[in-house]
Length: 306
Length: 295
Image (cartoon, rainbow over all chains, first blue to last red; front, side):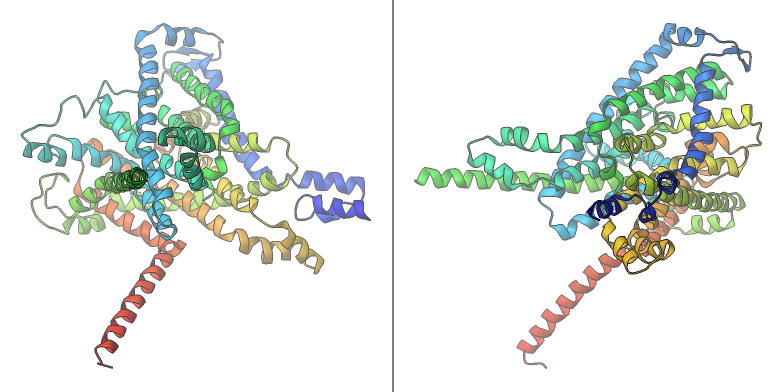
């Protein structure tokens, strides 16, 4: 009696109570996964299969404007032996790192303020405000910055008051790309960091201070270990999407601000499928490796569950 | 003794300073966030025909030109149609998958959860080019709005899935068991217990999918063929110099989105707050009037 009761409690799925015979049990065990069926179909056919094709393309031979099923490593060799492509890859990595660092550096004090100094009833509306800019088209948010930063823009007027002019090295170059990416990904970082800081018990900081720790030491040894998963999540969830950005570099980066995503786009526009696929596979590899390495410390539910 | 109080005071003063600095930083971040948005709204009323500085005068003609541009209207219509389909697909597929993700006896639950974020995390360019190759080289399909719907669903479904799953996690299964004990069948349990409890999450997820779809450019651009959505229209406008009509569309969109959010429940709370505040003001006023012997 007791055994069957526990069984009932552990029974899976809404129909789990019906576990009696072994055949029915097997059926219900299978039926608990039934919900995955539509997703499996959608992602099997339209995500996994196309990705497999891209991987295959990266090992096939480009022939003029079409691709042939002759297996080769030549695409990878040519990408890795062409200085421009290697440079773009390395530039992309440091630009992504810089943008990620800048995003977290400005989002952390913000999230800290929101979690610690803002009263509960104002936290929700203020968080809501952080998401509002998302409703303005991505493209327009980016071009709006080109108006602000441009020769004729608001910043030029502001600097003009002090007799300065807008630096020519900023817009349509790498700094503008990093700046705009920082702007675009700030909300992601702010929300994730806030979720981590919200759970922190601030009295622990005071306790550490009472026991003689300096402010810095209290922050580092008491707070940081507790919010580390949240910080990791923020870093990964900002770094990875930025790595594959191609629209912002295209709009504000000029010729020097090109990132690796632009290479994929350019190759495919020129019908160079093999090389385009090769670069795509390299990006995907970095993304998947990062996700696998950090899978345990990622707080996916925190990120989207609010 | 006196030195100790001084120390406390110094600490308190420093804490106040830190607090003030951080509050200033918080305010600055909101300026940073909203500067480009407010600029767009400002420029949508600007008489300058290049949609940028300088400010030459106030006009609403860009709003009427939006209503008169057939291209723009077609683009908006296409975008809304695609968004509706994408929302339907990702809501059904995402919600269905959220149940086994949370409730079945999975061994690799957290790994699977991270796997479901891959379509969000992987750059849109990759989804775009891989689907382009798949549709045109393998399936030999004509690229239409329907291929775009599929591509966008790949990207939006995980959001619904993760939002609904997060809600299901905090769900008390005892409620369903109680309903079952009271004789409710599977359908009744779902209809009366599960749906009302996770309904808000499903709604939030589908709203998310809808807005994501409306703004999706990268994937769509590769696989929509000759059709034009709103972001694609904006993109072509940007390429040939921005027209102020686009700023007007952006303004309409953000007001519309805020409207949708109001329906979604963000603003009712704000309204309650405002009404409470007004009531308190009125009460204080009445009290003051009473004090003055006027009532």
